[in-house]
Image (cartoon, rainbow, N blue to C red; front, side, top):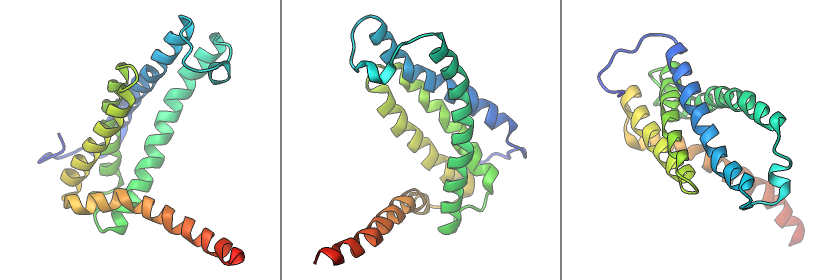
Length: 170
């Protein structure tokens, strides 16, 4: 999908695709718990859903698409920054955004009860790794480093916060 193609400038088409497929996929993620809850099979207590009424449905219908769009822009920005750090974002932010937007299609796996979200997450990651490799013309190792870098930074920050605390205890 991403290989040996010339991509037009702009993010309108990927944004529309990501919004439609990501919004639909995220709404599917809410389908099974709400269905089970409404049928009396309560996998969660009332604090998770509370009273299911029209306001909640309308809020989800507005909130999910907004969250999908904001997530795509924010996630693409962080991912592209990580690619630049590992010297791999040569295709530009739009290319990274395109991969992230098209990977939203994996969220249709949310139609499968209970396991769909796990399958969607793994497949979305696979699409992004392959897509970034192809669209930026970088090695899989650099793509993987870009994905693992935020985790490494997180653990370094945790260690930096814990060292002074441990020094106080000992």
